[in-house]
Amino acid sequence: MITRRNFLAGGAVLGAAAVSRAAVSAVPEAPSQSSAATQPPLAPPNGRPYQPVVTLNGWTLPWRMREGWKEFHLVAEPVVREIAPGMTANLWGYNGQSPGPTIECVEGDRLRIFVTNKLPEHTTVHWHGVLLPNGMDGVGGLTQKQIPVGKTYVYEFEMKHSGTFMYHPHADEMVQMAMGMMGFIVVHPRTSGFMRVDRDFVFLINAYDIEPGSLTPRVNTMLDFNLWSWNSRVFPGIDHLAVRRGDRVRIRMGNLTMTSHPIHIHGHNFKVTCTDGGWVRPEAQWPEVTIDVPVGAMRAVEFIADAPGDWVFHCHKSHHTMNAMGHNVPTMIGVDQRGVARKIMNLVPDYMVMGERGMADMAEMRMPIPGNTLPMVTGTGPFGPIEMGGMFTVVKVREGLARDDYRDPGWYRHPPGTLAYEWTGAPQPVARNGATPGADPEAMTVKRGGDHAHH
Ligand SMILES: [Cu+2]
Image 1 (tube, protein in one colour):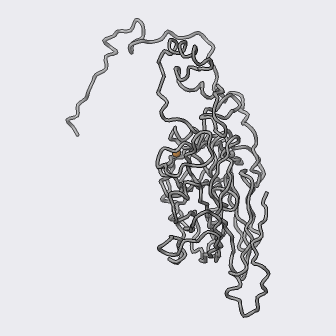
Image 2: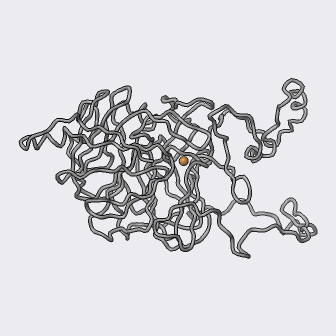
Image 3: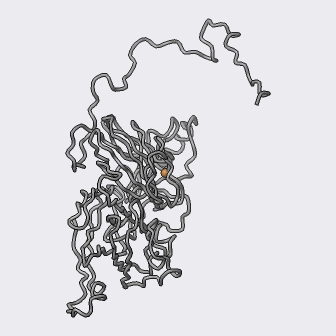
């Protein structure tokens, strides 16, 4: 699905004397991606070898080698991004998508990155976490002039250390990041075998405020976003992570929202092995099942996928696993709405009473919603509605997947005797007031308070 756009500067033939500027005058082509599906890992066709990453609902930017430099071409431009099937958004991004493509290279590589600005306003690119010369840091006004509309700037630096980084504008930042301008950078270790894993997934954590029925994010929103996304996708639009049983798996995440995200896995525990500051020494790693990813930070977690199954991987803030919703909906649990419903139905025949027994029925009912709007909770599993949205996906651990097979293996088939089941025997009498019928009420008295004198 990669289409080629040719940016080769028009036919100037350069003499041997023009060597130093020649590289700059011949701009490399800028591949563009039209699909929001996870693309297979890009095995390096040249340069130092490495084990490539898989960008969740994204892709890696191809490069060309030229006189010892790895040359990439980013095009900052308006894009149309599918957030999940049934909803697209008008975003800003790079090379056809938001986020932009992942940049992969190796410790010690010399990078020359061309950035062409096709936005309606100026921009820059900051290389978050990368140690580089000050003038390559991409801070508009401070370390460089902002890149004007229609112009191309060149960044050149050596990747001095391996790790997990990202790129984003440092120009009209609030607007440009709210519109989706960001991308991932992975610098692979030069020493083969160092921090080696079998599967290496990456994604950025982002958020949008898009009014139901509209297409463009509200850029002034600070906290009350309604689409909590990974790589500008929400459940059920986030691809599943297919993993072979026994694989060492790494998941790298970077947070460019304005709140933290406690990212949680089921069925396994993981260790934090890398941040945007570098690798974590083995003796400094500790086990977790939830890791908070702070604002403007990156975390890489690793685990051995030793438990077959469909294991949920999600943000633990429950509002971040929901799609566009009004926050002004009153809680109606326990409120008897029958009387008022009858009155309203005389006026509005389609009126539905909702939320009286919780809000689970929202996942089953087909409420009328505006066009280009996702249901608040959605997705169907093998046992029915999953009742989720937003930052939620599934790690599918299976026996015997091929090394580079990332295709969805379907739902897990549970071995006999390993599935929760309904009790169909005789019911027990229900205990009330902390006492079982016939028990001595004195014996059930709870001693209140305690002796706090010994602190
Ligand atoms: Cu979250």
